[in-house]
Length: 342
Ligand code: SAH
Ligand code: SF4
Image (cartoon, rainbow, N blue to C red; front, side):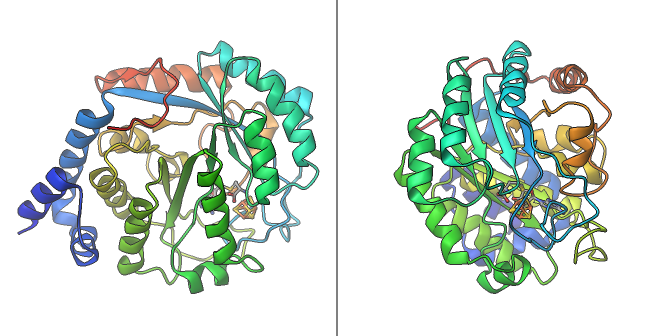
């Protein structure tokens, strides 16, 4: 029965909500599921792993998401904001490490007005880099200005498609506005990246199945999935961490249903289990986001505790990932890594 389901998913890239739920629940089929996803990954996006250099440029945030250490009510966090000149320097280093894309990520920091970001993006664009933004919710006009200034992609996780759960865990934010942002980004011609957390308190398998169908329905270009890592300085301090295996099954199902998407092996996975990124790259993923942030800023960008590699330099990250990728017979992709369309 499950074998048939996997075969069907591998051939037609469609599963119903009930079928997704049965595969999400079935730990015994996890290896077969990962193998099927790995085959679809090889057939549709190939063996190249895309590296995206991550720059964590500000941990100041006006939002108050219950799971996140950057939330505005967390007084225990040392706050920082890099200057545009410092961000540009990191982008140059990322280019010199050979990364074709930089991901500029931050809390929702209002100091970075569209005007300031536009000036910065133009300079980064002049380096020949592809730019991904991950800076949260903005207006259509701001997204438009940023797109014109050279931003190519945008990451904005829906976090969960369960509206009530979303609005409980992201107080003051509305699910409708999150959807509006994703629609605006699509309309403006960004490559749209989204994703969800696995293991939110109150999240069901049904809800995860719906998340996967949502990503398929909006034809997401990128989907990042991470387990919840409870942060002691947040209201979810005592929550249970997300389950590694369930998260892995979500990633594999995503690859079956969105064969062309770019799917990262996320750092949060590696916080749960060492070597997670290698396993996830063999379970459907084709992207890794090495950290380019330097020194103490790495530690202070504390979305969750136990973040890996906080003491490493960007050079360490690059060589460690190159070794991991070649150890599993994969290569580092040299192209810009836009989503492929068949
Ligand atoms: N402020 C931006 C980008 C930074 S947060 C935004 O919210 O879109 C990036 C991602 O970190 C979030 O989308 C969330 O899914 C993840 N995250 C936050 N806290 C986390 C935690 N405790 N465990 C795992 N992932 C977390
Ligand atoms: Fe801010 Fe993003 Fe963290 Fe929410 S998830 S508190 S928006 S940094």
